[in-house]
Length: 326
Ligand code: UDP
Image (cartoon, rainbow, N blue to C red; front, side, top):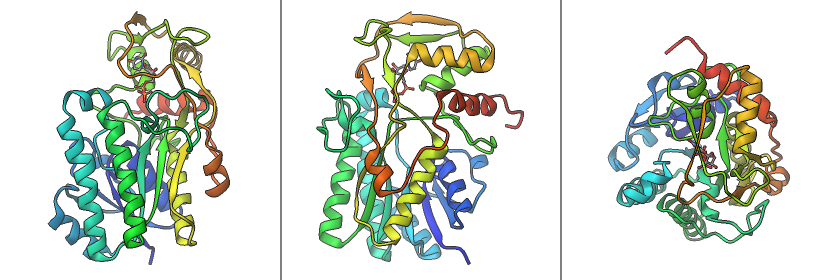
């Protein structure tokens, strides 16, 4: 019988890809999701248990039922702009929700957790690429909540022996190469799906947020990392904890930066279509350059991205957004 892993947010974008990666690695992924932004159709590799991470009783019930070896914790709110407008939602869901989960895990005796963190913990970094020793200085409530949870994990590790890994994603992008799951946010705020929706006529155009940055072409540079590679890193982190590896935080990125203009050009090449573009003001809180130094993950998790070219990443996103089901 395969080992159970509880995946909070398992019906979401990265969570559903993690469920697939867990299944491929021989685990039984149990998606725990309140379906507030996740999708029932994205749960294909194990059971779905509806529930909220703030619902302690429900968490205890599900944990007792499956007795998972570990929890992968993706559930949370992810929109930077919304976190500035409604910080209460972010502190409640992301911080109190994570505390509720960790408390339930303690009660049931589940001692391993892989946490979905973010490059937003670095705020406006001075250097590129960024490694894990860089200053952690979030500039919005979203990044704050993720960093607070990392601190909680560290302190629970010291006090209660919790084994934890926090994975700091740079720009998650692309979709499952078999198009079995993919990105479906509502509203969509991310660059690559917005480019694709603009090509498909589902929206008027892409607005580029600022072309006056101190970068070679004036637009922001990001490190786009394929969502299936992120998913594989979670499995690698879990296997490392199972082997008795130490707890810690890891950057996950390709180590290569692409400007918004480069992403648009690549999307045009991949799809053979023109992206309707307009140039607008900068978006608040966007650093000019965010590129990962992921060498810690390479060495300690033995992880390396497989779908590392931007071209391939966009190709999988295009295939997903061109699918005919749902
Ligand atoms: N971006 C943009 N127009 C959009 C959405 C994003 O110009 O409609 C830019 C954004 O300013 C950033 C990059 O694309 O430089 C990636 O943004 P995204 O929201 O995808 O991810 P983030 O970097 O905020 O995590």
